[in-house]
Image (cartoon, rainbow, N blue to C red; front, side, top):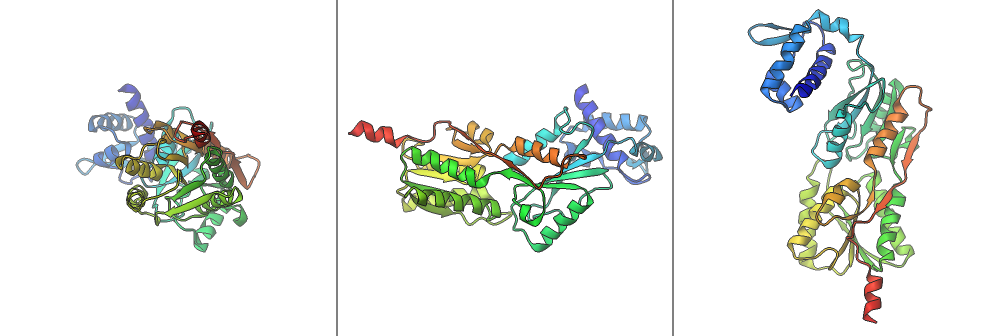
Length: 359
């Protein structure tokens, strides 16, 4: 309890020190929701901030920031912002966990998490002055990029060091970090083809974006190069739509229609698992009746039952690479390309050995 309280006091002290003296502070309910803690814990943390002279109660129970907070503002470490889309996913949960770790991701700097509207490709503004920000890492939401989005990111890059994860934007002069998506698709298809699969379903289960298009095109081209048939299954997902639910429904339709591919490659992880759920409910055993692989976060697919063979996107490595790129005094680079790795968990059947047994 004491450890949780101390952490909450630290977080709330940061909130108080970045607000104008005399401004109203957050309510008890707002603080409980923001930090996902109990009312009792919030009360204890507030008592400490009042004792420190950072907050005062006026007008009944309303809390206000004091002049003392302004005096402490200059003592706050400069920050690096990590902006993520405001939605629930395994990737955003992982980022939140990494940022919240006691050991700082960037020694000498605070790492501040910022959430933005997932229907937008880029946040309208970033709290640069309020958070004393010296750099920012933006996780792309998957929403289609417009010329205005590119212009806004270019402006951010002029203001401080700035990097995007999840989009390849080097052509626009915007620093970015990501896996080698063409290689990831080739590696996944090679894994299936080496297993003797000659017709492969490719599940396009994310909104259309530069990254997803590159994965899809590379997978199809690799199959053609090896004279392997593909069945492209586009789930028709748009930015902001529930990808998991739409993928589940699309896969149920494929099952009702019938299919003759022996392996399925999901271009993204979480929605693919919804497709796997539909397959299991239809009595389609993995890998007995259908082999399945994914390009995804390897920790996510490893925990599934059954675990899914995965070309891992190594999200933690992407984040740490991006943070290194935006840390002041880092050597300026336009891109950080992460080479993906294949993780075998047993969801791909080797048809070559099966054919050998029947001869």
